[in-house]
Length: 449
Image 1: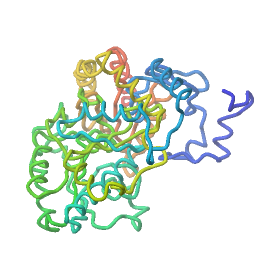
Image 2: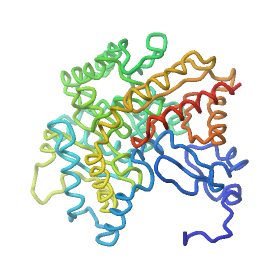
Image 3: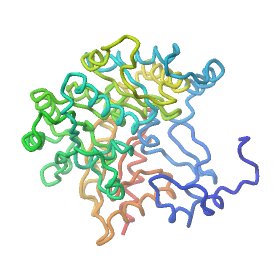
Image 4: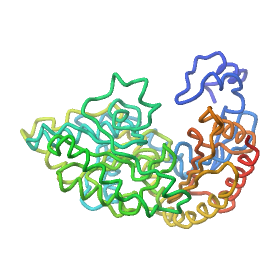
């Protein structure tokens, strides 16, 4: 590692404070940084500087489902760097990126045949919102400016995504910067009716009718788009009720509102299908993707749009720029080469079938924790699950943070959001590794106070 001298003291450097960690309790980490410093990774495991092995229970941040250091991905990255390390996406292009767009479109629902590349989920969400505004304006309906999100939704940290998002701590500090004309539907999570559901809850489809309330309040002629995660991952694996997404699709179609699926977490295999749209049998007008498309190795995201949307933009003088939007690194050739390798591995190793095989393994394992004193709910879908633990009186999130820290001592890198433990194990996991993961969490919960 040429960028590090042999005498570099990473824990001391963290404590000294040059590095400001994102979405982290920085002061708490500075007090004891050593257990949290990751030196390397291989397969489904991380390794700390001290050599401790940690099972990667959330595939990085839902983004490394094929594990770490996959040889075919490493080789694709190396080869592309030696061939074409960067190419601007403005007015020129390159074969590796063009072919990738086609391969992604081939996996998308019928009618979604065009891909606009960005570099992250946050950028991709903001791109989708801009596409929605531009689409309606080009059709002579520029009065459609409102965006409808959902409570508990997470759509990244750009000002657009933050505005349509519905996680309060992510919003309250930046309230003055929210984009105007945004409203939110009620979320679908109601433990009183759906606690300990396996797969999709049978209660709650009528929560989609909350969109009709907003249509009546604002008038459909002012609403450009509705954006939802098919499965809400960042707020703790909130699974859509049976029929809920279908009803959203029906309402949007009836009122001429675009439906956007944020599949940054669910895209490329997490639901046992290429997209959650396929798993749930609902076709949106746009799909936002990121994370797993490159296995987290090089940042990449994008938006898949319908033929109707794309063709609406392809109008006006042929020399005109149809959509004044893009990024320096849109469709980066290194990211595209890695994405090709990811898709190759998923095809040749029958990864989607593997996910479908592991889904009942994870389901049975996590639901076996029902009955533990501190467990208040368990839910799952695809290769994703979550456990809610009872919070400490007067200190929400404290128990979850304690379990996370104890997990580091027990060989598990957990993802705890508040008092929810979320699971998204790598697709390459074995049934034995999944059972060991859940057994480890069982011991942590039993030891929690």
